[in-house]
Image 1 (cartoon, helix red, strand yellow):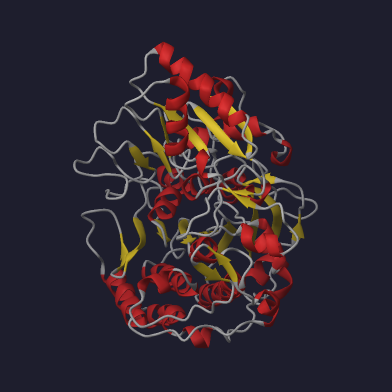
Image 2 (cartoon, rainbow, N blue to C red):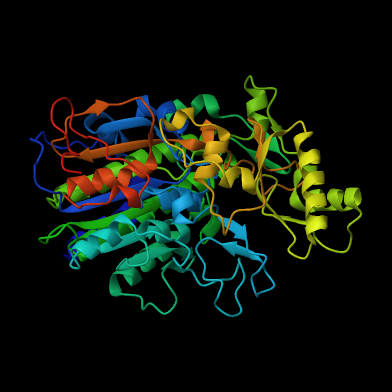
Length: 555
């Protein structure tokens, strides 16, 4: 066993060799009628449907296997309006939209909170003393519904549920509160878990391998031929992006984290955990969720259309191929689902260079601080922050200390100002969203109000929801740029994600019509004959059998 664990860790410790990994294929076999022994649920953070399709013709590894041998839904939807990491991950293995999971955003305001910091991070327990939204104890306390793993454990307590990711919120939202093992990349020290959890020998080994890798410099990756046309510089504030190869100095953790090296390490950890825990080798079905975070870090830091993103997708494909090859070598009967928590949008400076002169950054006047000051001037209500928010789009909250008359005055002035702004598409009031029925039907045909309703929680959502127009990047112009690009909009660039299923013996087919990420849970549950009451989730089972037959029969 230790020999196989060491082989799994070579995914991360031998990155140059991995670049030469051959295409991975699985021998043809009839589709099994029995439940798979292992569910492998992979979320590639910020892997938009656009990014998936742009490089599809170049896949040679794991993504090629999924697209050529699996069941492909290229038009999947994170159907809600708040297309961020935490809400997106909360949908994948719960079958529920944010309106049901309670995870409406990465962070939201609770102006009734006892602590000074009123901003609440989605994966923290703010009730812990001395914490704030940046210094917290990670926790699944805000997730209101069970995950697939949680439901599996209720049906059979012997089920093992493991979740490993580059981000705490991804690991927590996919693993859920009853997972046996939940680990995420915590910093240069490696992977960490909930406070007080002892580090087992496997994780200590993984962290040692990561430390060894981090201590070595990375000269960078070769530029694949398909990336050559993207190799030109783009300037945004003080940053120049578009020509990177992920070279880093020894010990540069940030360079490691924002690179394909992070995903290689996460997949190595997952492969080692599967072997070490003998997942998929007992009578029951086990489940492991894997959050691959590097694509998102690359998208924020460099944009989605430069050499950096192109290399990242190429490396992702190869690393997934090596990962699946290890599972095949071990003889596991496993099913894979691969999707994303949201899409993404490239930085406007490069879009303007490439035929999109209308692309722009958001006006700083729409930031909550500036908006609050403007409304104070208009209403004459001084001496307090009138409007709270976590950015120049999304939920806005009115100060709790306002009288009814003051609040009405502030709301009217804010609506007038925002609705007149040329970058604002729509502003909805809390009452408007609450009065809207939960959406149904094809997600590609929903109105913005229906998308907003899918993200709405009456206790956590704001008093107003601000939605920017398409092609307005919600990061303002700045002399010093941290992130150059982001996501979070209600537009299809951020909503559309691929949803791919694979199991040895499945007959390949592709369904181009829209489906939702909330459909993943009931689809997997049907494969393992796990009943899930339809009234408890928002998704529907997707039939994975081409032609006659129905994998959802009896769902």
